[in-house]
Amino acid sequence: MHDRQFAFWKLRQRPIYKRVEVTIAWRRVRQCLEHLLGELKRPTLGCIEQQRTFRELQEGLLEAERIRAATGRWPDVAALADEGIPPFAPDPTRKGPSYKWTSVRQDWATNYVGVPSDPSAPAWTLVILEPAPGEPPDPAPNDETHHRLPDGTTLHVTIWTIPEQSRRSGFAALRLPQNEGWTQLMVGGAGSGQ
Image (cartoon, rainbow, N blue to C red):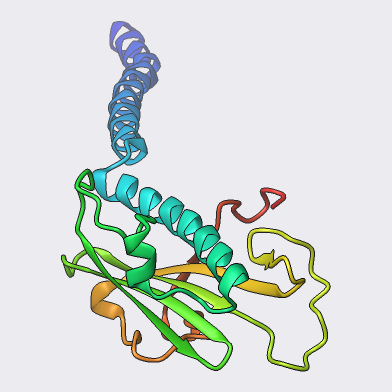
């Protein structure tokens, strides 16, 4: 009888030990996951520099639009750099790679392409599409991808990036960068209401 009681006691205690082992294991897993997620949430220098380049391209676009509205022509990179307009003008405070900016025009497409000095950094392009002469006015409302010049011309504007080693373009103006592997960046993500 004593052996039976002992066996019953061992049987009863076994799940508790397993629960303790599982609880300890789960705590370790949770600690590891929290550590990894904390590392992922911490912005890296590359991420901060990419956000900065994106913001500077938005600013540069507005300045280029201002010049285009005043002169009827898109400014070249040298003109934008001479006016100190980012990201086209050299910036000694930039911690990441420097970029060589060029402008490429073809028909009614204008691109400002930034090629990094470090091939591990992404390349950037600002794509501006104007309507061809004779096209009806675009009724799209002004938003992140539709800008309207003072004369009523609606521009389709987008900002794109791609790893430099994957870039195959930059010699002809891009109309559909996604067809060449570029990724469009926007302020509002999917489902954000923008």
